Image 1 (cartoon, rainbow, N blue to C red):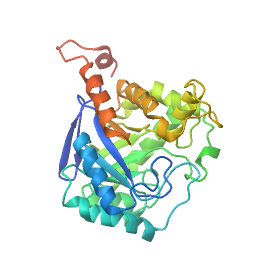
Image 2 (cartoon, rainbow, N blue to C red):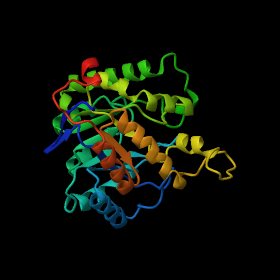
Image 3 (cartoon, helix red, strand yellow):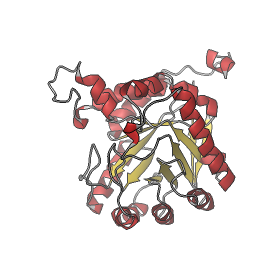
Image 4 (spheres, helix red, strand yellow):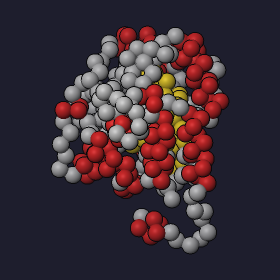
Amino acid sequence: MRRPFDLVLGRSRFVLGAETKIMGILNITPDSFSDGGKYLSPDRAVLRALQMQQEGAHLIDIGGESSRPGSLPVSTKEEIQRLQPVLKRLARRIQIPISVDTYKYDVASMALDEGAVLINDIYALRGNKRMARLIARHKAGVVLMHMRGRPQTMQKNTRYQNLILEITTHLKKAVDVALDAGISRSSLMIDPGFGFGKTIEQNRQILQRLREFSTMKLPILVGLSRKSFIGSLLGSSAGESTKLGTLPAQKRLYGSLGAAAAAVYGGAHFLRVHEVLPHKHLAVIMDGMEPRNTGAPTRETLLS
């Protein structure tokens, strides 16, 4: 069973544990690996966000800069120009909380002023020393993700002595930074960073051992949707001929669902996904299989 948590994001509150929560991905970028260029129009982006809300998303995560391996950063000005029109429109229409995927202080400041209540930070507060205090002032939340280096170079540094321990140590340091800045522990989530500076085998190992991150006693968010390691694992067994031995992003839904099921089983509280409805259906079934509390201690309870 998953650890229960009360997650507080501004005025929004989530009771975590019994139900898997779905975070819908909305990329306002021309170059994201999966849906780059589809939602550059603010009106089209808003419609997509509202569609994901209708399909059962609990949060919308909006990004204005791609973080795929090898991607180059965009200027703060460009990122704000992509995000602000969408945020202004959504604030008046959407009923679920908004997260913004950024590590830049000025972008986060704008987003929080426009109504976002969560910052999804791939640098885990390492990108700007002022970021943590900004989030604390707004009483917002933050996702702390593990990544080595930068998106441009992260896949060149994938050697670990102890994979899970090193990720956990990295995240614990980020948690300390957040708490020292005044961010409430009830507003923190951790993300082991699938695909960010990890090999195919390392990603698989993290998924197999995901429950070990519960020792940090924080909600776990995972971003598995359409990741390249899923395409690589499927490439040799899917019966399709591909030049690189991997399925393209648009053909990774079934593999993403399989990985998501493993993540839920391993204790993930949030699934960050491109296709909301299939993952919502999967989550409902998986959550229905969780043992109910009958008063008798479970193995997980005895070991926690």
